[in-house]
Length: 301
Ligand SMILES: [Zn+2]
Image 1 (tube, rainbow, N blue to C red):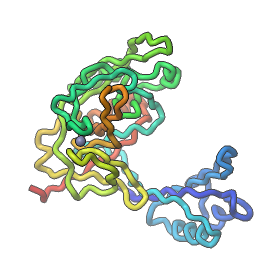
Image 2 (cartoon, rainbow, N blue to C red):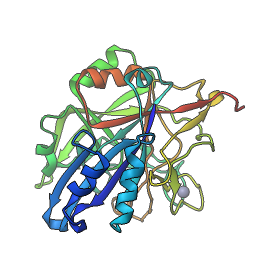
Image 3 (cartoon, rainbow, N blue to C red):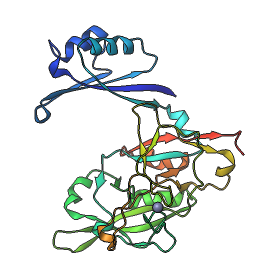
């Protein structure tokens, strides 16, 4: 695992442009991208460097000299071997194939055992419904997700997940809701987890809380890499019964429960899977998820 930092700055205010800073800090196209974004009136520069890279302090010093205040995101880069031997991996949709689905499109939830204030912990009772105007966006993809972390896979991947005997897994149907309200059933399936893991260890870092529900304290989690990388920790004893496919107890984002479920915003958990499940996606060439291994705290009881 290599801790790295992604730095974003605007090159348009720098005399001589972004190249001045990139050249003097030795950051070539192997680590930097430069994109003129006229709509923002910015030259957006991203530089990704290992935390230990000697170019990092040089680059940050130069930016300071030119009065730039860069955005710095902390991340960990894992080797294939580390990903392939992890106890569990967070399966984070990276927005390559992202669809507007959820209660606003007609998905339903049984809230009888959910938090009465925010609906967190509700059980999905319908198929996935999403905006059919986005059908073309799915072309060329074999897996994706809704904005709310419902994970969608094509029939081939679904069949392969059954073949490997992934535990804790079941599927629901997927429908596109067309502009004329027709519901078109796709040859895709929602990948669902039967069970929810216990809460993470408090040693978890890089998740912030913002406006969590005051009743259940189970949502309002956001990934936040500006100060530290996201490192999810579980107590070893809490993973004894983990399946190949699980949901985490914590829910990401805000929730606002309204009298009509369609007007509500619900928060949703991440899916955590074993390397066996990730291999199916890897071997199918799927690139629409970022995977990061959890850490296991063996000392915790
Ligand atoms: Zn709540």
